[in-house]
Image 1 (cartoon, rainbow, N blue to C red):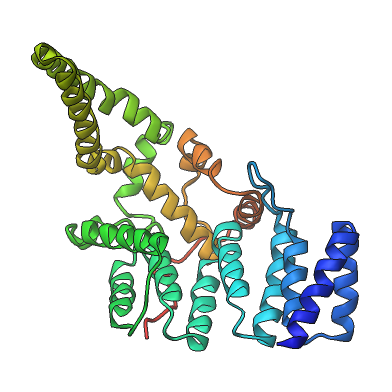
Image 2 (cartoon, rainbow, N blue to C red):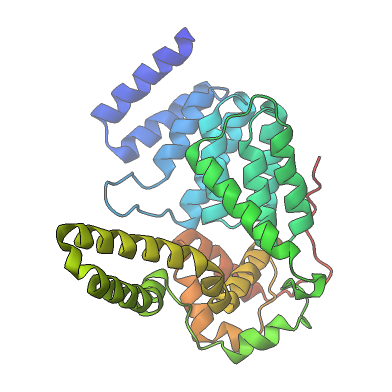
Length: 327
């Protein structure tokens, strides 16, 4: 503990007195002398990434993400109890590198270290749901209920609810209705191709042009009906509008998902390409507006790696599936 506190103080002093580039160089020199220092590896990973900003975050490049991940792998090898290293590594693998298979293994390794934590199970269930492998995702999410004394944060509860909602919706579908991008004969490819130049519906557009008109009409009727009640009527009208907006927003979620089905399926295809390192999206769809729009939601490192995969041109096997097996 004393060594860790001493290292933390030394690192803080270096970062306060040196530039970011010089701090990284000093940390790397220290690692040559002490390669088993997990704290130094985590610091090297952080310095390999762009600095944190108060405004819009600066996304790392592919090389920055790869260097940071290399440092984090060394950190957890030296000290498997460093939760911050596991968390940052999982974030880089999924969000910035799209290496979902590696992320599944990463969280399996973390679970060996901390078997009572719900974090790896939530992350794995989320990845499997993105694959469309709902059977395995359901098995993993069910394991969370078996953990003794596990406490979920608000964000974790929200993510778990989203996963279970998607699993519940998937269970209503027939097996052949679940999109499998690796299968070139999947009937969903025909639908996506037909609407390949139609951009996804944004949440803002949906609220303003579909929900808002109905809320306006309800508010107008309520105002006309309650105007004779003075201030009390105005309050009642305001509450009616709020309730109507909340109710319609919740009730229309299936409609919003249906309108964006092509975008959601194409997003899954992109995940499969990144996870497998091989291509599955037909060229006519790849040149459409929908595909180009979906790429704008991805960070630079992800795009750089995806470009290399597409340039490689190796097609995925129609029998491809994740190697992950729930414990």
